[in-house]
Length: 451
Image (cartoon, rainbow, N blue to C red; front, side, top):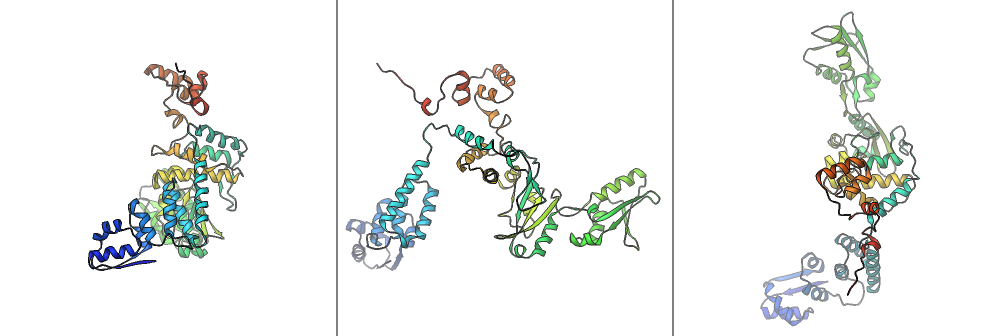
């Protein structure tokens, strides 16, 4: 619906506004805002403009809110905005309701809003609820059913990653060095659909040392290292002979490289000794020709919904994201410390939730995401990823008894005595130790006798 006003004299503007459904007082107050020009206002334009609450109802009314028939976008805006839902839920609800607006009636809209608000209220935590205890129990109980084994990721094959209880321990301990670091690399455009392109990109990422593409021999007779390159392996890894020669020359300024008639490479140092010869052989063998140091293997796998995806053994997120053809917005690693360093603490928080949920789901365990979210929040609330242990969250508690109950009891009590620390006995652990009710749940209520 459109409101069309040809504004000339201010009195005419007032009359036009009144005809459109505005009260006389409101029309008088806003007539000065209209210039003597043709003004066309659509409903969608008005919703984009911040409007004071006092005027919102009148403008929606003017645009046909009370007309019989289908639900107007304004009805949805007003109903959702007046509710006590969180901003994020409001935006999501508006989007979903507008998508099915033509199928709604006002009664259905009211019913939906009532049910959403009821569920939102029920989802809230009761005051003084022991959310930490509930979260720990909700994860700890299913955790007893988790396997201690480490086995390969379903469907990938050949790349083994830590799963089950060891993986959960790795996450909550915030370990920087994982037992099996791995990445799932999503690709862009033509790399997703063409296997050759995906394989070539995989070889750009997988580390290739000289020892993997040729045979190295040491000759004490002429104090040289001889390298015979394997043509098939060069082709498989998209490496040229010239690249290998250039990398060997880059080892040092005193390294001489000769290409012999049989295409073997003869490598020498100007300073010749048997000890230097052995060092040269080791250096040549370990020289990186192509790829990223630390990515030991890359597998190319076709997934029905996403096309070709790369799985790696080893993780180097920062370097991988710079490679052309890699989708930096969807590429992930299981190394949470690396995510925190490169993408920030919010990304690390999301990674903790995703990793823990996927590990539990893979074991067939159903844990509410809100318990996992609480743990992720506790681990990341100070802007860095902290472990749930004596070097992290547990070790930083204000309560002496709580710290002492967790680990290294004597050390904690001795340190507290030296510095004269006090314990306010506000938490769960310390109240259990001294044998009094905890200040949560029913224990939060104190009975006071009046006169």
